[in-house]
Amino acid sequence: MHSLKPKQTKYDQIVEVKSEHVSAMSELTKLSSMPREKSIVQATVSSITKDYVWVNIGIKAEGKIDINEFKINGFGEVPNLGDLISVWIEKHEDSNGSLVVSFSKVNHIRSWKELEDIFQSKKLVEGTIIEKVRGGFIVALLPWGVKAFLPSSQIEFRSIGGKSSNILQTMRNKKLPFFIIRMERKWNIIVSRKSIEQNDAQSEDKPKSDKSESKQSDNETTK
Image 1 (cartoon, rainbow, N blue to C red):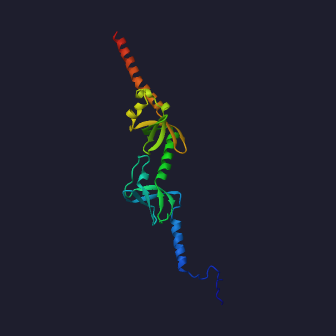
Image 2: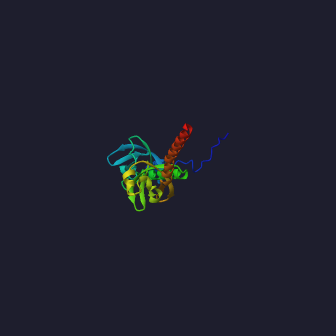
Image 3: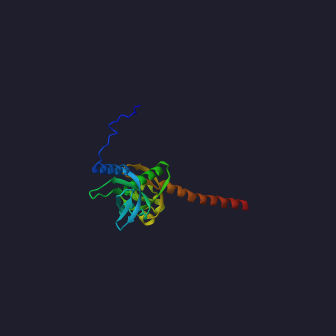
């Protein structure tokens, strides 16, 4: 009885494995586990120095972020050691072989999305007047620090003594509610306080009117 021997194919043949083949496979495995460039990933804050925040995204190389990136126009907070934050991967390696990441890119993307949701839902947003410019004022929208334009036409000047110069004296650095009335790309955001102040004025007048009517009613009852 003859034993059946399977026919050998070219894929069954022994292949000589060289050291450069092992290195190539190791490099391929590393690349396959590395997040792609121009994407957002989660990173752990591994160390903090005076000028930089170092983060780890789960690969050998660490990335550093300038500490100023965590603030938009002076608003924002530096994370703590061990915090999990979202970062933008710009490049896997720079000329020094370091991972290039950014927090400000993610911060701007996130803040725009959140402000756009507020605008679409017609909700109020908190902000503070920080600067007088031609035709109005610059407002920092909180907590992001994103700048918006408040036209003079969108303020009831009677509520602040009738002069635009009084705004910086009475409202600067105070947290106030605003409506976003326009949002365009390139960070062109326009806000308003006019309708809010008009509603506040009407609310203040109403109790006085009710009180007057109540007093008149009491006088008639007494008579």
